[in-house]
Image (cartoon, rainbow, N blue to C red; front, side):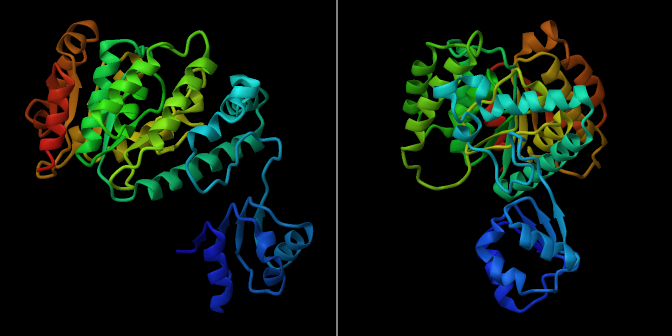
Length: 368
């Protein structure tokens, strides 16, 4: 691998005696190894993505054929970041200054202003940011089996449906699956919450604490603040292993929907298309779809496409829709799904059930 994302690996590369040509240094504080880098001239094709370096080192690198990619000191995000976001990072300053001054809110404003003013540099930084996040997500998840849980953002914390989604997330995580959602409020938050909880009792206690602020309307600050308090208590409880249980993939395209905090890592994108593709493609253990509207319907048909065109002998992960009445009458997607599956392997991969318990067992049992 020619990509270096930490100072330990950079130190090893400098000590190895191998050429530095062609390496990619991502988001590193190069001042820590400045003297050693200034002594090197084998820098042709070295790529420096963001990070920190002195004007002297910047000039030395460029003179010897390295490419140094700049950033914008006024950008609310680091486009070259090598790791996923953490909840307190996105909501930094919430308690002191309010939500509008958090990095999450400022990134949404930054992206919208760039579109309005057609700022090509910001467009480039956003694209680099999303590619960096995508790379970080791949490394974060690794080979772990991932189940996607889809559902609408409008589900309130005090509803039975929210509690059901939380129980679903917990059941899936306890079975060894990583629960991945769109990272927003409502059903997404509930599934991430359940996955992060160490026990069923913890799920019940968290639901009780969150119910007092059922929605991010009218105050995102109160909604997020109450969640962060629960999150902090949850992560203090040691789990039997250190594996990833819960990830969220929200997007600033829907910046009016704040990200939920109940995740081991948050992969937030500017591009909704990249976010949707990343979420669905990583749901290797299956996909469970709770009640939702337009965005959820889009995800259903986007996930069906590869199932529809899959080779006959190719094993297909289950796609489970929860709520017979919802998906046959209120939002009649199921008849179209059935029609597409006729005489194809897709027919055996799609399911319509009425309870989250049935959905969980279908996905878990499909793994043998």
